[in-house]
Structures are given as C-alpha cells and as structure tokens.
Image (cartoon, rainbow, N blue to C red):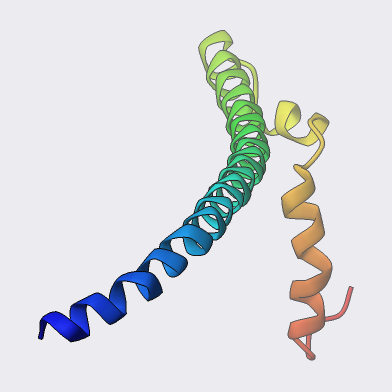
Length: 105
C-alpha cells in the first residue's frame, strides 16, 4: 500500500498543479455567464411588469370614469362610447370573427 501511495503522489501533484487553474477559470467564467443570464431575465420581467402595470392603470381609469359618470348622474353609455377600446380587445376581435364561420359583419 505504501508503494502505491508513493507512486500516486507525483500523479496527484501534476493533476492539482495543472487542474486547479483550469477549474478556477471555468468556475469564474461559468458564474459570470450565469450572472449575465439572470440580469437579462430580470430585465425581461421588468418590461412585462411595466406592460401589466400600464394595462391595469388604463382599466382603473375606465372604472374611475364610469363611477364618476354614475355619481354625476350622466348616462354611462354615452361616456363608454366616447372612450376608445383597449388595444388588447380590438386585436382579439378579428380573431374571434374568423373562428366563427357563420358570423359575418
């Protein structure tokens, strides 16, 4: 056993000497890449969050105007007809009409 251990000492010395720098460089590069991926993912989610927030604010504005019209006693239909439809709803309408073959405009 002692003879085998003495034969393996130089082999382990060479592996450690040349393997450790490679392992260190690999680890540093790997974590830099992973950090960059996480930054890009966070940026992407930030844009989605901003889009959701603006959509919610638009809906809230419509609700507030409807409540204001009710409180003032004005007809809600006239105010609703004067406000443009949201982009999401108008983009869905052509797709819905194409899905229903019996429906024509």
